[in-house]
Length: 331
Image 1 (cartoon, rainbow, N blue to C red):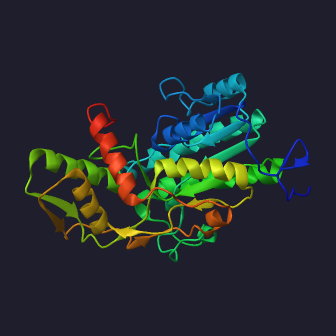
Image 2 (image 1 turned 30 degrees about the horizontal axis):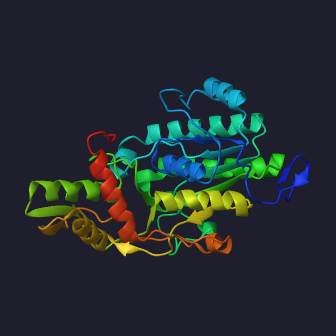
Image 3 (image 1 turned 180 degrees about the horizontal axis):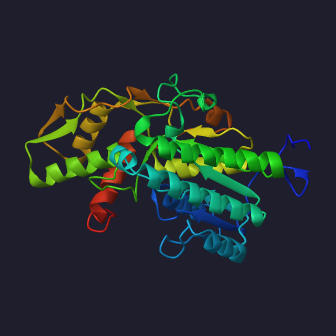
């Protein structure tokens, strides 16, 4: 039995175009960093039926409940932004949770979407899917060419499985499902927990606390020399909608800015934005991590999209949001 080369809807070759603003659009993970940004973007763009459920209302790890919900709402479009996420400490401490939870979430949502003939699905992954020593900047074809970073390999394997799941649906059923791999994201509704957050929200919390208490110094791990790429979640949301309306292909698409900064530079900027007046010290006995992690975003550029929010502007907006919500943010 041969495979279809071109994705199709109802047997007709699929051509990306403007999505139906009146169709039901399900955002899985609509309260999270990425999902909430996507909801804001869709509503701003005039989508009238954007739906979602909190994890308390719908446990995406429960297959029967997911199938029942999907059969009830019958979405035409889905963005799968729901995931169990965390920093290096959480990933390395609880690898079973990160593998099992994410595999179940993805498999349940994607299988239920297939069972209900969902036309367009965008699966969102993470840049950690790429090999630890991939050539920089990292191209999409680096996938599965080398060993993963050991501290988050379980999470990465789950996300790789999600990419292959969307590709398999394209091959077997011809549906125009796509996947996108963002670089390091930040913005409103991020996780600012001291133990569970990623580097940028952790730095925002650390410097804001120091600014409030008038501390003389802040100490960060490592040398500050590793280079990282950061993308505001509102830019990510804009890119996802753009890809759903302009891109169709089996390969995952990297989503980032195409530029990076050192951890030292990001710390200095956050210190300036928060008003911290003290000194920054570096504990060089602590590990630095990978020297550089930068995505090649040429495929995204070919699809007609570039990041719009500068790091300075994005940090100012995120710090302001953090200060407005510091008493209610998730731990």
